[in-house]
Length: 194
Picture 1 (cartoon, rainbow, N blue to C red):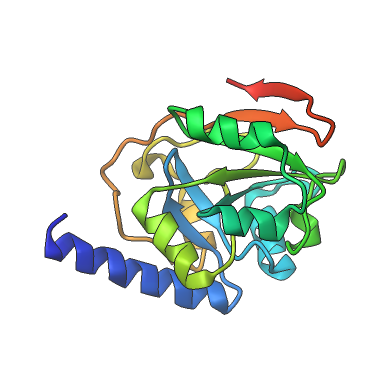
Picture 2 (cartoon, helix red, strand yellow):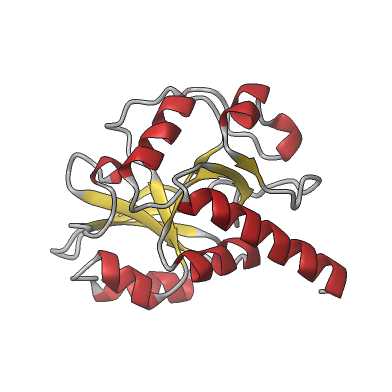
């Protein structure tokens, strides 16, 4: 990575962090598609995202994390198979785990579970290092509309509705949304989206 792109990355992390710590919401590139995000422990910020997406609060959103430590801060019990899936996954994989804590209540699913993904993508990873908190991630679209795979496909309504648009990877075409696997504390495994 050149110094120039590194300093841009650091500037964008700083800008996004300043918005997030004030309870704002951001539009940002993830390891899959563009996402709308906020501090996963801030219920007011989470509510802003539901409102922008015109989405019912019963449809939970996923949370990005960057370490095992962060996962253990949110889940007391993590099934052994979760670590195996994380280690073996070749592509971004979201795990739905039971009984989250230390996150905004309006992000938790009605069955008391939460979808999480560990990311290595530099922007998300470093932003969470600075936040020391997980980051909400939900696709950058109005609920029911197609998921945009590139920045140019994101509707003006979403772009205007966030507090900050991260100025990175605007030309990049995103990957597919992640695989989703639900794991229950009694070790049941169910693939929800391949």
